[in-house]
Amino acid sequence: MIKRRSFLGYFSIGWLTACFPVVLAACAPKQATTEATSSTPDSASDDKTTSKPAAKKTADGFTVVGTVAQLEQAGYIQTKQVAVTKDPANPKQLLAVNPKCTHQGCDVKWMAGAKKYDCPCHSAEYAADGKVLKGPATKSLAKYPAKIVGTQVLVKV
Ligand code: FES
Image (cartoon, rainbow, N blue to C red):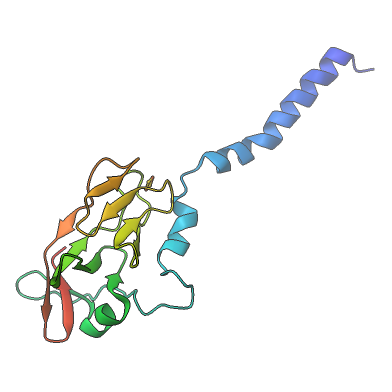
């Protein structure tokens, strides 16, 4: 016959073993879950603003990230490596930043109405030029040179 103390010991070990994977999953970074959603713009069906980075680099080191038509239509272009918007203070100027949040690396999302980037993980906010508007992030998004050549938007990453 199992004594009460032994039973409680076995029960505790079994309970901890069963809960351990759940605790690990809960403590994992949110990046895995946000990555799938953060690559899509506000509405899941509107995929016009995202584009895959072109493999081709120009002689001066710039890479095509999208078209002027995409930028005009959506107000921004975002890939895994770069996000491009027009400068809210000077719409003829482009601003390109690394869309990885400097807090823990989630993909930030351009909020066209508010003209700022929001991080879905812990609510950090960045200006179009990558400067921190609200924590917990303390470091600005990395900036890249950007330009328009013909009908294409190019960024030097
Ligand atoms: Fe962006 Fe934490 S990862 S605020």
